[in-house]
Image 1 (cartoon, one colour):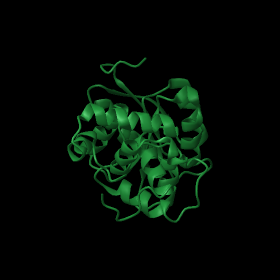
Image 2 (tube, one colour):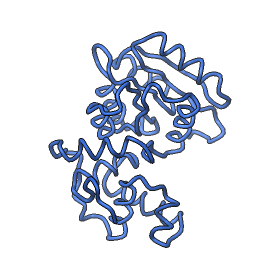
Image 3 (cartoon, helix red, strand yellow):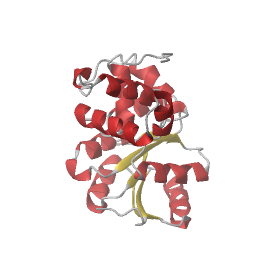
Image 4 (tube, helix red, strand yellow):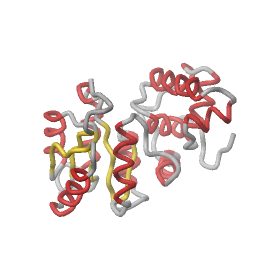
Length: 227
């Protein structure tokens, strides 16, 4: 089991050596983080992740050969890699591949011109089990593509949820944090966290990002919806 005071172990995946070198310098210079592997394509990335079992993978999505989308899906589908969190790196905020990667298990995404401090904060966020959802482009991206995509086999029926769990899931889909949801529903943050966890377990969602995808794909939330 990974202890919270252990260094955050990161794998870098990008077909451009210079980008990997810059990311390595940034991550290795940050106290409490260390790069444990690099890969230039998706196949190599999956092999390194299986060997090193990192906490976080910074994954380029557009690479020759096996791309980041396929690699993310392979990592997310492997039960032995359940503790690995993938963050997609992309040049484009509106990238349909990013949506597919989030639906396939990625914890969120960052554009490559993200400020260094924000990238490091994102690594800590996903290592803590949260998703890169709020506020920012991820939720808008999911909403845009989920409403036009064909229904996914990953999208479950929502009748397994209680009414309160549905309410919480809707607010998660709007990008609210547990504290913000708790204030909205007049409950404690711990109660909110419990509802989120139960919804994830019942729906087989890997993380909050998949809850957002499921909310849009099942019609529980639609673009522009407000409670």
